[in-house]
Length: 154
Image (cartoon, rainbow, N blue to C red; front, side, top):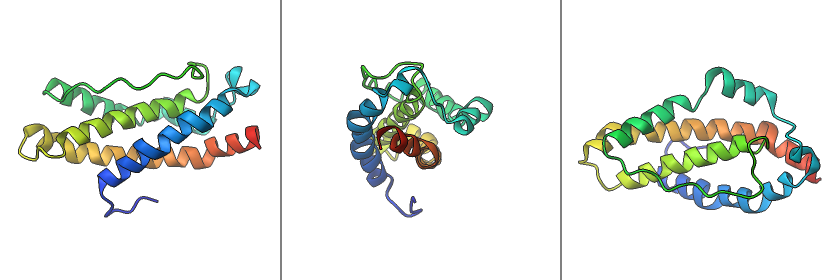
């Protein structure tokens, strides 16, 4: 999975520059075109329930808001895709992609500013949040999303 000693910027590169773009540009458009997904289903109910019950992204979003209020530059907007709609089950992983990109932008901004109060307050916690959310994201992909993709496209 994710090695504890791995460099966060190597992980960011793999996830943000390689893995997510492959999903968004190749896999997701194919899956989104399937009639079942055009109708809004199926959802991975276990992970959707977790999202609704414990909202695992809330602490990260709150931390980012605090960092923005203290001078962290606002993130670039995440790309929009014609195949993505609110009722599409792919909106859940895409929301995670957008949040992970936002964290990645923050970490890259702070990378060479170790003396900056923003770095001192937010770098380590945001790095931990990125890894925590990435592990949840991988669990969702392995436990539901990729299984669904195999069934729809296989």
